[in-house]
Image (tube, rainbow over all chains, first blue to last red):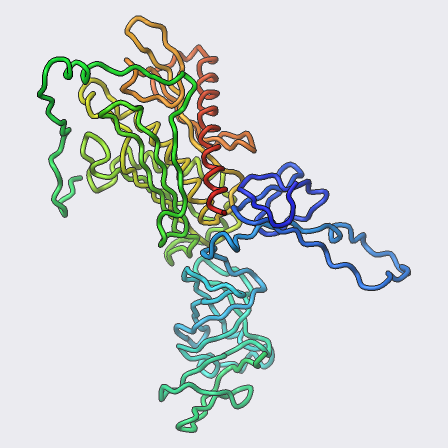
Length: 209
Length: 286
């Protein structure tokens, strides 16, 4: 039985699946939880519902599995070199490599809080740039090569690319360089402006957090 | 195919010349008998994290039998990845393993070329089969991992050069070492595995020309008169599963018990290697 913050080796028994939920770095075999990584064991208790529970007035599905503590094995503290794979729903930072009328090809640099070591390529299709007026979106009015973009992973994609979307207010271009080569600042939802020449360029601007 | 790009050393064995009086010569010429018990394996040294630039790496050394002129086994393994697949490859829902095993040119008596020969390719595919059973492949879709094992010293006796076809049997020891060292490097790289896989070898040997054959674990070919058959096992101890099994040699097809016994002894050797592996991984964390 693993206590919190102990070390697990691959294949080490962590506990029965009836008492824990599997987290990252673990797997289930014959209704037991085993570690699948070399790392530190973390057991996180489930968040308790605040206040006294209301008397049920309707029949709801039994929320049984959510009550269990989650056990996970993490590589943090063992090695900083742990590579992560972008997953659907993750927010990533990427650099635009090239644009075509139908899509922008980007290189994913940071996934969540982790800097990626490997080169993962992403794709922002024209229909995923923004949520409204999708038919009027033009890629060259949204991104330019070299821009740093915050985007969300919407699909594992095809053999080469992850599919990304910027169809939310906080997603879009974070850093842009003008044609004159200066760093620009955002002036509204659609434009970045060069502070030296005063020229505005269209972009899909991300709202600052 | 010959390697035309590099200046290769002379092909063929290079044996140190033995001049000296008869006593010394006889000492060299006689074969040392096996000093270990039949079910005892040689000592092993394993360390992870030896190559800083790789995602994961490990180094394995198995001691010599204690006799002069016999080299031990020295392996170095590097793991690169998980990383994205090349653009030309098709979509893969799981991780793609590619294993490369290469003898250093100076690892064996017979000088090896710089290009991979069929024996090395064979080792690579066996290693891949052994590791594939241990990895949880669908945790890493669309990615590939490269596992490269360099055999620095190939566990060969320099003196018994022409006496017997040693190479065929040495390859079994090399494979079991490759499996153990690759398993340590994979754990170091943080690739999800169901268990730690380790390799072990058992062999059916005959010590003198008229004695009956017996089974030993972790055989050194030069210590025995003849090796009749050998078996390399890759074994997951927690799961109690064999992920790769390789038989070589002449065994009577009717004697099923002999086959089972060889596998049993191979599993025993692999369990011993696994103990070293777990100890080494524990040290990695601390």
